Length: 208
Length: 208
DNA sequence: TAGATTGTTAATCGATTAACAATC
DNA sequence: TAGATTGTTAATCGATTAACAATC
Image 1 (tube, rainbow over the protein chains, first blue to last red):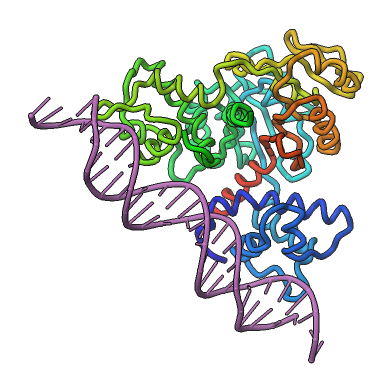
Image 2: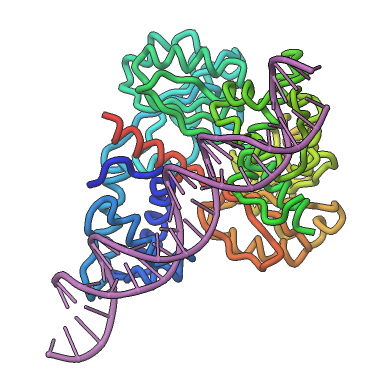
């Protein structure tokens, strides 16, 4: 397996995973890069190039076994073992994520929600409890947390990320509208919803 | 203004807009591409190239006026006039978006929520009402809607998008976990949350 | 004016696509 | 075997960075 897989390739992997799941559900057991390229509207060349960053999963003259390929991609994406998450920011968005059943199915387990608002502390989403953010240092070390979901207002994001980093959390899923500066061994996936909405606005304006 | 602005450039515009807003709040009135590049961790060259797709907003020997530049970008992004949205899918995510005050401040006005679940029909988020999705054809034409936010389960996304397209909606903000096939004059910005989470999982796995 | 900094052209880098020998 | 399709190298395309003349 090559080093330095480009970010563009990683970004496409979940999409392959999704389409392969749909093919599998539809009872399709094998597929060529050519057929898949038509369904996914990318080039067959790109599919083969992307996959061969990780190994030769195909068979000449046959194509790819759908189930095997999906499984290989799930290994690559680290979906084989579960991940424990906490959500910091118990507002609407945080609670929406906490209550999203699909994540649980894929092995992303929300262990706790934290907030600083007394009106939500103590409430639950399903069986996930909401704690005071003051208790981060007490509770997080007991939960074996991999990933912190940041859904608090941007003003608190940097400080909270730093506290969580000190508790050993290296992976941040950041919904706060700010770019975090993290130490070199930590990393962050940003979901800036308003950036996405503005891109849509741009396209709307320029489509007339 | 050039034609065919690349998608990579458009994607960066909201980030420029955000940083310029922060600079303005901090009382900074002018900035050079060099200074901005240090703050944003991109190259000065890229900033100048990006902006010059839309016009010469800078002044030699001076740099850029922060307020003017922010304003120009808001024009480019189409943020000067308000946009009316509907949300189809009144679950946690849809209600989180409906209740997010920042969008309203930027001129994105949620006019109505639609759902097919009787237990949420009739409820409100702030003063936004939730209607039966059966009433789309009756209500949407009365609201001058620009953008439809799709937060329903993926099974209903394609059919709903088609109904909305027939009602004249061309812009879709899609949170459903599927890729929509839309007519050529319609377009869609996807927010696939689980794709983003899987990328984080990949990085976690490969960071050890 | 002299210094600073843009706008823009040219050079480089990286990602995508095409082509085809290898091989199932 | 013959046909199909991969894995991989080479060619192309597009995006980023560097350089510098123009000019405020």
